[in-house]
Amino acid sequence: MNIMSIEINRDMCIGCKKCAEVCPGSLISISANKAKIKSVERCWGCASCLKECPVCAISFFLGEDMGGLGGKMSVYKPNKNDTALHWFISLPDKTSRKIITDTKNANKY
Image (tube, rainbow, N blue to C red; front, top):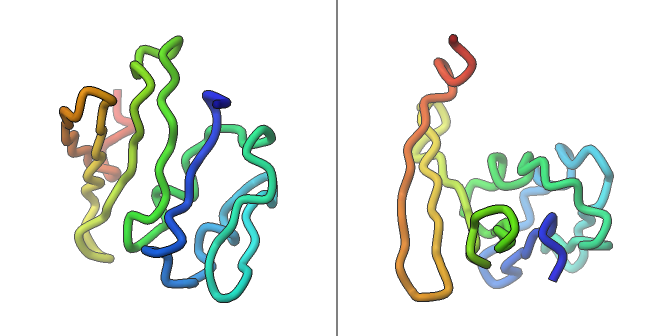
């Protein structure tokens, strides 16, 4: 599995097209009203699609060489006006973590 790849859960996808609109590589298309990645090996790993998905249907693979131990990460924004992002990390040993970041203050030094 490529460490810079995503997985789209088509059962969860609502076909809103937000992920396809923000993908800088134009790698996501909409087919049968569901998102689909055209080529996982070309994914840059920018995570833009994760941040835009309103139903948490996209996961990012965290490769072992990146310290992710082969887990997956997804992100959820509780409501449209909230500045917090809730990052969910699930590891192969079935443990999980949640990290909350404030997008309004994320780049302050």
